[in-house]
Image (cartoon, rainbow, N blue to C red; front, top):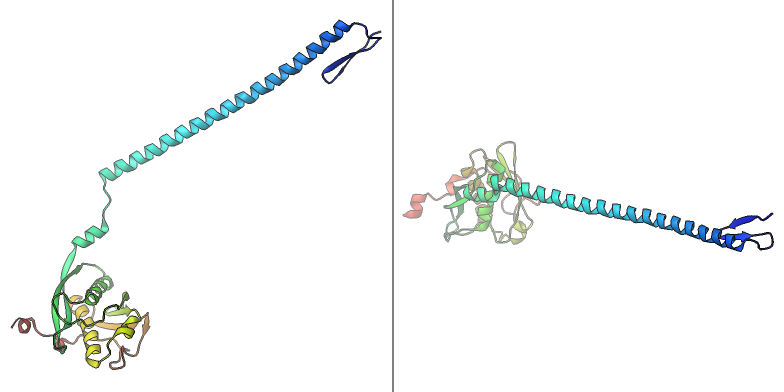
Length: 239
């Protein structure tokens, strides 16, 4: 009795090689089925790739549309509510203060009117005044601090004492005479206390630390009160 067996993709026929056409038929049929399965598998893979590609394109389109929508609303919001330029506002809000520099003989202090940024906080206002002092006179008076001295910060302690913190260049660059030290101390003290009523005293610090003196002539371990006797009256200045 003939027996037909299948091995992988080939068909073998026993019983003395009978029925060769039947063997050929089964072999061709088996090959066709194998090819059909391969095509089906490839079609499934191709459909998956196309589906993934469509999802990717859709995600890109939706993402781009979302970004454009966000940018549109941001632009619209900025047009309706333009951002406030705080620096510009501060530049417009200025006030007149009196900054004290030395007279030509370097014996007394003379006032010079300056415009500085107006601040609500006493420490911030004092900082603006100190910056004006360090910037030097604009009317030909003698500067009371050497060029190159930096201001670290200004704080208020005990509600009425301004702690003015200078860089170490204050000691390094200061000319050091007793007259120059007095001019620096009271130019600073009078300028702050006469423009900020809440501040009654001024203490000098260097790099955040207390120093015994600027150059060894006047002790700076205590806070200074204003000395109005050093100020030349404006009427004397104009006479």
